[in-house]
Image (cartoon, rainbow, N blue to C red):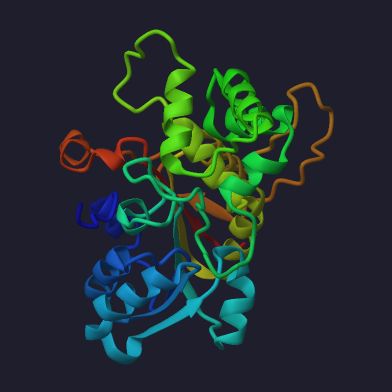
Length: 311
């Protein structure tokens, strides 16, 4: 399937009136969003970041038409403060983070992100990182830990049943090491027919990917660092595909707009909410019916954006 940037028109609208300067695409991918933003904003330069070297190679080619307006750095989005400083960037007009797994990763054999191929269970965004793979997690974590990962990050109600099957197989000397094995094991955990559009293993695969890449733990720190980099009227936009990620973004943005998050009966505010921005849209922006029909992978996408204001 060709790469289709999710919520592209909506993202362009969010960045339509940002000041001139440098735009940071913190999850560059193949450069689809960035190319459209650069075409629509001739006064912007791009600093692109990605931890996937394969994606960087494609993005470099796709963005070649913009010449010196583009710089690309191999790094995780959590390092945005260091990357901008080391790149000499001071005037950040906008930041975009698309937290979904890309078509490149899903459609490339050998990466372990998809059960379409029977690949080793890797799932690392940065295969050169030396970090643990999904297979490592299934081989070393306890049954309770595996169940918690699948439940918390995948919101899978059958997490304990799936974890039990994984560990039972491991104890028989047959650890789960490929995507095909895991997909079949998860599907076998549901004796009845599941009346859902998605494959029974989708939530489990999502959960393991999030755990392997430590995506939840680094998100809130990224939001703060990215917002602090913005100039006045600069925009931070985040596209999520998971309710837990969206909840973190929603709560952080609310706090940055000065909304107190303390319990209603708390006599004094202790959360230190300070109005530093305004929401670009009151609610999350979701794909149109037309987009979800043409690109089913967009169905769970949500876009939230905040504009920095100087007090």
